[in-house]
Length: 53
Image (cartoon, rainbow, N blue to C red):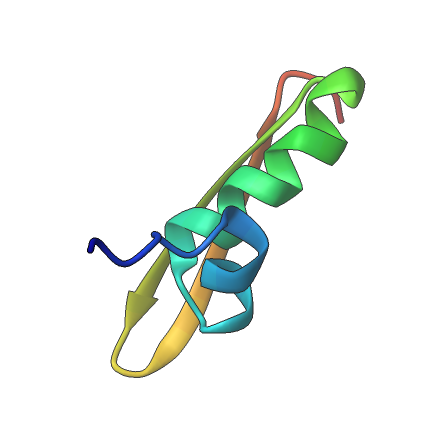
């Protein structure tokens, strides 16, 4: 029997930076905003990028 992989929301709740960025991208891409996330020294760093100011 294989164990099911956690879904994206569960991974985000566990602090997975890529899962958090993916969920944020899903909401912000219609506004032409791209999100990147990473964990560094125990802190979540989120970078937002857009061509518009």
